[in-house]
Image 1 (tube, rainbow, N blue to C red):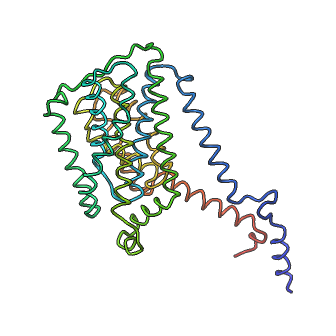
Image 2 (image 1 turned 120 degrees about the vertical axis):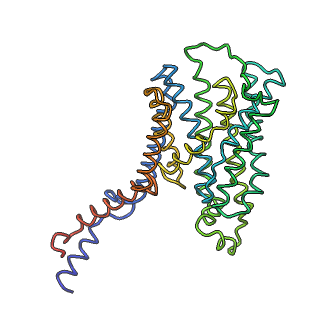
Image 3 (image 1 turned 90 degrees about the vertical axis):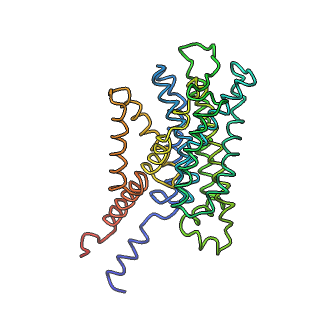
Length: 357
């Protein structure tokens, strides 16, 4: 055996192996992820305590609503590859489901919260016929169909009598303390956002999520392998609609009014797309990061500058930067950079790396 071979065998024997002290392989990664998740959850729970201002808790509530809606959008569009620009249909339908129910049934106070399951049922119910129509076409046509459905529902909200027309519907008043008025809504939104992220994580690791990603990669081949494409897409679409409708119902009671221009807002869909693409399309944490960064920034820009469209212009510029320089999103790109750095660092630590050409 040559001296170089002896040195290589000694180096391999000296390297720490799995389960030994000093081994820095993959098992440390789940621990870091779990610690990060616990830190984020603790910060979210303590946020109203650390920042009790109504303005801060309003920002927090809106951000959590977008965390839930962006994660729900990614659950369908990010995993399946069918980009939807009509999720405002589910959001606005949830808004009006709670508004009309509270008005017709004369509900007041906390009894209105009992209508939130109705908002989820309406959002999911509308997704069934919409999905049966739109999901039979290819992806580019699907985008156009969702936009058409959005404008149909927006015009219905403006012109139907039971929606209140352009005047909208006013929510019942809650006789809560002004100092802590936002806190119950904040924690309800936090529960919804956490549940949505957990569902997204479970689906991604399940057979159902594998079917969705197979459809995203190659739908024809997935069908050939036995994936029931229409059924899988429809199930994800209905789940997305139910979560978004529930978020719309909660948002209506917090805002205190249902108006067509705010319930069916085209910028809502663009914001969801931007958040998912910014953080990382098709990942669990990507839409969460996008919502946590973009929504508070947009709120701050809107309050800071008098121009109503400055925040949209800046967010559009941000979207172009992400698409051009980080097309896969912040988290996947950062993960790739980190993997390259770790690989280079390990190569430098290998014995004989200094004498290698």
